[in-house]
Image (spheres, one colour):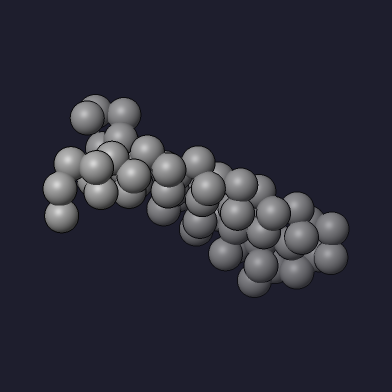
Length: 57
């Protein structure tokens, strides 16, 4: 794995993960599905944790 692979992983996963989390959250709120809502919240936390090294690097 070289620098280009690390760049793609660190910079693009949080962006796409945030969009995916937003879709999960909207679906969970709209259909009042608690498990999907929790999955969206977990996705938000996971993408923010992945975003920390992207911000530092």
